[in-house]
Length: 352
Image (tube, rainbow, N blue to C red):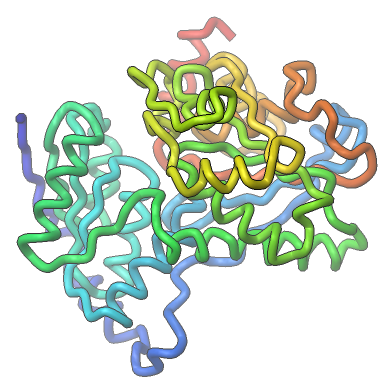
């Protein structure tokens, strides 16, 4: 196993300084590390879909994605409730960045294990938050095994990229915000909430929030994946948990070979009328990212493009059967592992 360790000194002083700025005396209230994000109406997408389309801009979280809601909560509880002095992650993407940011804010050490395929740019981003970045193994499962061992031997808190009740509770807060903002704009319950799915943590949070809002029977949750990373879609169609033989999609943030068993069980229990699973092509996802950049001046990664494809390309059928009245809400999950050069390269790859 190839292993390379990057010890970053950048941000170490900031971690110590920030710790002094966070009050942990009141253990009944966990420090919130995420921010309230905007819910904005998209004129371009409203025209395409013939109804109001709102965007929940989770890409504006400090770490770059929605992950900060749940991962931030899990990290804060690990430190403030459980007394952890080191956080260990196994994600070379949005979850790892959320853990690194959280550790910096909370003033504790962070170790992030990533596979060899993790781009150098992402490694630098992780290191910029003061995290120790350990490159181990050729795929996520190997990096995760190393992270589990490190947490066990050091007594550190293992922060899973998508599993965990604390994480799902954190993610559900975005639905509370959506409900409040829609109400303030005179909107009722939306017809559908569109989100992307990787391991299932975001979907778990969305469903938890939808239930809390009293929307579960009236609001469809559209779970979008890309072909080549559609483990939930395959599982729902097979009516049993499926493990993909390989991740062939370019949407690596969706690259869980198998969905969370608990999330899959929840989807089965709610039924296909409440949770609608669809898979689009990589080209659909990239095309949606390009349109989104042009229409809204924001960069997002192909994983997020999967959700946007549902509303940029209604012809793929993801919204078929959704309630005719009511708005659509799209969770713009994030874009922390994308930049202009990467999006340009994808545009050329798919000849878009």
